[in-house]
Length: 269
Image (cartoon, helix red, strand yellow):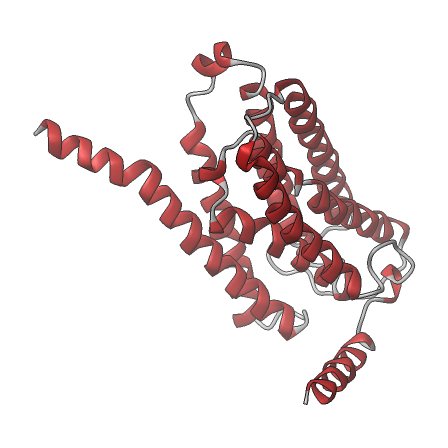
């Protein structure tokens, strides 16, 4: 039974593979689907191993490393954002519906390479989780956090494999911009407690993320309803992915900022 299931999965993948984008076949960590399996498995195993290791350890002080790490990712996302903005503008990309096409125009290839860099950055961002564990900030190791890091890597691979250009560039612009703000905030926060008076806008990070997914939902829904020439599977995936994030981030914002504030108002009344 297991053998027949494996055969069926392989046949399905081979069928899907014929529709993959020929421009990304030679890029590292794209062609082989087992790459995704091993990387995500390594992420989950790494979480488990570090949690076990830290059970009887004191929290590590990683401020200097985290300043460098977070500000480096902020700069990397700035580079990704600027490249996406520049070349999509020159190519006259439509923000809501840019049909998928296989073009070997030099600027299209630059956008694809930029998309690949974004994909690789998702692997680097697994370190967010490891830093939480090493610092014993396990309360931040939520389902939302782990789901976000693991699923966005898988989705980035799917995009690079099948549709590395077109409307997906809009999602890349949105997410890289959010990450510029987010990693800048965490980089400054890691400098030390004296920075706290300048960083009173943490809850607005979640607002920005929610706005990002509202825009992503609008783009995905528009592509579905208006018949944008983009693979139907990716349209459906983008739509449900945006909805899942709106639910999770909305729930996080409610619990973290609204529920507590409501209780405080009732207590004072």
